[in-house]
Amino acid sequence: MKNMVEAHGDSVYHLALRYTGNRNIAQDITQETFLKAFKGIKSFDQNRPARPWLLKIAGNLCKNYLRDNREIPVEHIETIEKPDQSDPEQLYINQESENELIRAVKKLPDKYREVIMLKHVIDLNYSEICEVLGLELSLVKNRLYRGRLILKDTLMNQGGIIE
Amino acid sequence: MTEGGCLDYLTIQSVVDNEEVDQAAVEHLAKCSACKEQEKEIRSIVIYANQLACEEKLPAEFYKRLSDDLTYKPFPALLFALLMFATAISSAYIIEPGYFYWWLTVGMTSTIGLFMDAFFELLYFGFNTEPVWIILLLAALVLVEVIALSGIKRLEGVVK
Image (cartoon, rainbow over all chains, first blue to last red):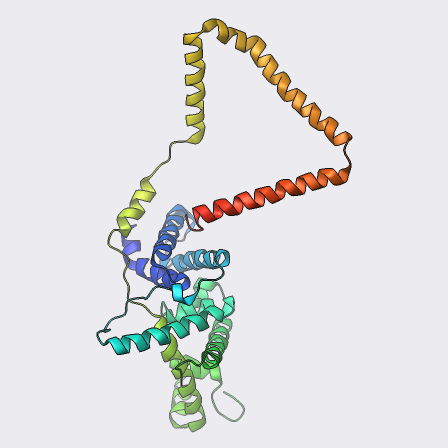
């Protein structure tokens, strides 16, 4: 159990943190994910990798959370620590551009957002995303492409920093 | 590949995402300016979206909190209710055995009678009331329940 938390806890936490924008809620969702996983471990095929399974549980919990708390203003999203943030000016610019990005991601339809989150927050490859979401490879590629296009359009409409 | 020999956007995206693609596609991308332009466009949004990645670690006490939650076994509610009932009955018997016997005979009968009266009153009410009033009453009860549940949900929060 401890190994599983050590190996995948941070990934699950990152996903929850990006979905909710709140550390306490993200920790609660991470805890709930592992509790559900341990309760259902007998039905899980031990020969398969645990990460997609855990991320699937976490993703569902995050979506439930967002469904019940439709509007979380970006101003209420906590700043997430990044490495190398010693220059205050750069820190401010980074934070602004990150907030723009979060606003744009929040506007994405669910089916695109989940793919974008798994790709850019957890850095999963296509086959891992397929496994988490139970989708065909071609569908994942298409959704990722469409999602990125919508993201780009939204950022441009918001006057974002993207070039 | 498209009809003109250029790569389709999904293949270019696969290259940008470091996924497995044909060597021929990689070679084409290296020398085709139109495809390179598309690659640049996809790469710019990928770089921007990569800001979503975070380095934050779970707090050190997380594992302890999780294992505490896993080992916590709440006292079964039914057993607790039965224990309370047994305590009430035994104390009633010890304090006043006469009253206890009275309750087991007359008291219990009158309690059951009270419930039966209430049941028949409700039936009588149903027979003698216009359906519209019954529907309105039920709708009011549902409304009260919805308000109460949303209040509880707000108090408890969504997670846990």
